[in-house]
Length: 167
Image 1 (tube, rainbow, N blue to C red):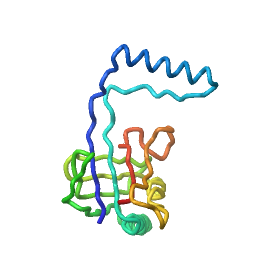
Image 2: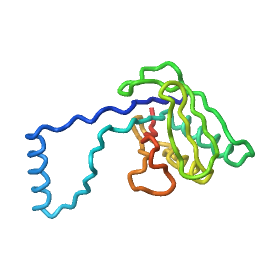
Image 3: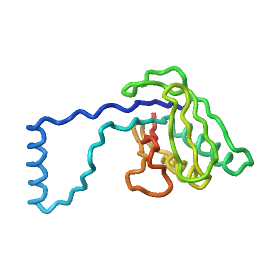
Image 4: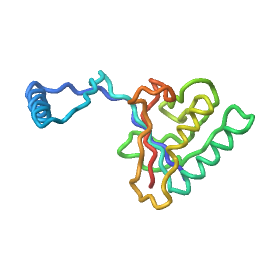
């Protein structure tokens, strides 16, 4: 059975001056060695994170069910997930996922208690479902990250970062 776990936003812990100096020395060392780094500014709050996990069979079944829904005339569907497991390292269990055909990029959000929402144009939800293309021989711990770090048009800027993983 699928498991959905969630950790809400957490305040960013400011670095001390000595930690900042250490970071600067590391960056200088990388530059001297000819490495290129991409530096992302730290937000005031870290975004929450969602994890959707299951066996390879569970993840493939979810993908097939969602793709069938996208071909149907229905505008929304719901998927129940395991309501009773230890969500650690996340903060809570989310026992239900609701998927709705709308317009625009895929947005993953939650009410922080009981529902994970996936909204977006069918072609963008289909792109999200490609993250459920788990190799048949994937081992427990295999995972992929679905987010909008590249600023692409298929994922909403305010979509929760989501991990799809094998248990």
